[in-house]
Length: 535
Image (tube, rainbow, N blue to C red; front, side, top):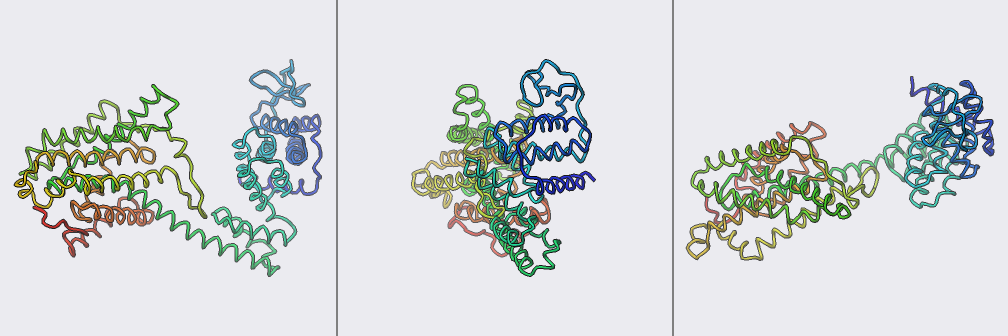
């Protein structure tokens, strides 16, 4: 019922604006109408909306103030109507300080409230002090653009200095032209709106199929059908790009979580069930860095993620080295005991964090360079936080490849992975290599936690959500192979993103697991196998 009343109110505004020329705002008359009955209040709201396009900026600011006061019930209608402001009573017509604050606030009906909201937004579009205020006002008017006169937006675009906002205003003005009585203007607006290719544009143009002109004008019908077809095609493309982008984002996190696991499992044959908790430790260390910078150098808070990278890696790698030296090293010959021991460590870490810090989600500051995104086409937006995760994963991949292929540590890791006994015979300290590899794998997991901070809920349980997927990636790619981990991460990430909207997150994991099991029946060693790997 309320939505029908809002639509009716918007139509009333449009009809009045189309037949009443824009005049200068007569402040005393409008204030008197705003303090009158329902019919007079309707006239006041319509007069405000009709007058702002040709009014001065001062009058437009007054119109926004009066409309807001009527909505917020700070307009006091007595012998001398005033607006109750925090600084004191203001004369409703001049906004000059007033000694009188007597009177009652008029009650807006369901019909008049949306009219005053339109009036406030229209006035703010002309008088807003910042592009943000004017943009918010435009967003409020955008929902009713089809019932507002195009001249309102044309005047606003002429007065707008911000290039981006001016383009938005012109776009909304095209939506307003859809209601024009001139069919040629409507067809031109359809063609321009079709270039936007978002769901709102599709709704606007598809709604014209119920217009009488659709059945009576062949050119109008052809323009509507062509516009709908064009937008639907672009939306399909943008949906595919969204799926690909989200899959890449998920795959990047999976890779960083799985790369360390692949190194540890491939080198030592240790199934580290605490790997997910290293992700969580990395996220909590990132939070500690954020809070330290907030207290010591708040001006640098936007760069806490960059500052946290070496700290997160060193801390999580240190925890991994300590775990390997104190516990895992004594259980190499007993894989089942290693499995149980690392599981116990994961439970210990989770409960220590719960007791020491709590179970609530941590709140992270979104740096200015990670806020928002770039609209590419249709509904596809490249968000900077997910792009950071992807770029960070690529950088981690490059650094890990360099360590494994171009450093003595990497050479030793590959030698021990392929033949531990022979590596020991030629003088490689295999136990030291194990310790360093465990630290490297743990550090990579910590970096995954850092990348998750801007896009995921950080709490003590977060690591357990990734451990199963990480093992699936390692087994599918082939233990100990970086290339296999990359390809398997991409595959698992993309398939999860494809299936999850259709069947849900749990079903998606089950389906992916069944697909991996079926693949391993055909190729048990995974996508890539390390030659000479010692079982």
